[in-house]
Length: 319
Ligand SMILES: NC(=O)c1ccc[n+]([C@@H]2O[C@H](COP(=O)([O-])OP(=O)(O)OC[C@H]3O[C@@H](n4cnc5c(N)ncnc54)[C@H](OP(=O)(O)O)[C@@H]3O)[C@@H](O)[C@H]2O)c1
Image (tube, rainbow, N blue to C red; front, side, top):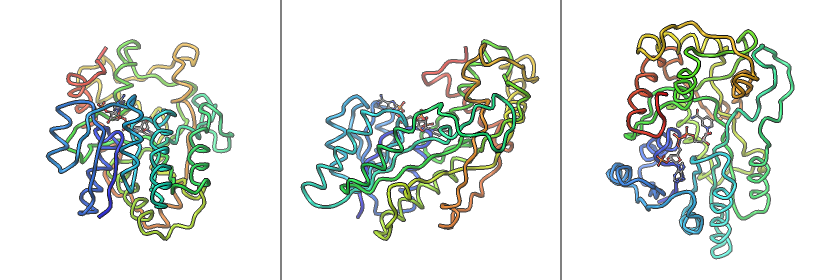
């Protein structure tokens, strides 16, 4: 009966993955660190043991991590203290029992972005917008021998989560915020830069494959071999915001569905959204992963509706 400890169990990715794992591995015993009482009630109803706390409770994170076969970190890709505390728990467990836990770190495909600033370029080199510290930290932990440490790097996820805790698509929440100031959805260059989009259910099935593979005990790969890219269908940024623009206009968030040209100096985050971010999921596909959920364009309208509804109950606003 394997056990899992989840950081970020109420989040868009963590919630979808936990819900899918509970269905796919019926004897899985799950524990989650949760900071909000309503979420504790919702997840307890699924049979999850909820421990009240937050990502700053590092000793608690270490303690809970030291008791689980699998630690899924889907709370914050860039939180070094949190990742270190979870790995510390794995180390304690190994020192006490000689059993290697499975640690799964959620990263993001954005680390592979280039600096093409809104122009499609199939050969532009990866730009160090983000340091690759997390990749090396996780690989080093695996190499040290006390843990079997995986990284999953998802592309932008979209679509309705299968988790009972509804959560807005990250990008839609950000675009709602940006559109409040700009009165339109922005692009830089000519908006032809591409990045992949993956349905949240397909992302959850990728995590499930990796977890099952890790549990099989047959993974002889090195730490670098435990790095998985969960990519999706490549779409040009301008096509993405045109589709969202129509939905924003329809829902009354914008007076126009037309995108607006801005400069990276004007809107610095557009360096991120103006990148070509390309990644190949060959390893997952070799393991039988077959994304088959509805397309990005089929999900746009519902995702915008969900984000508008979530804005009334979560910490991002429509302004
Ligand atoms: N979504 C994507 O398309 C995508 C793609 C690639 C990479 N990523 C990365 O993956 C990570 C998770 O993304 P997401 O979209 O799933 O985010 P999300 O929906 O905002 O979920 C974040 C989760 O972490 C929890 N959390 C955050 N701060 C916490 C704190 N201080 N104490 C306790 N819990 C805390 C949240 O709990 P509450 O419910 O209490 O807020 C929630 O469960 C992020 O680092 C993101 O950058 C996301």
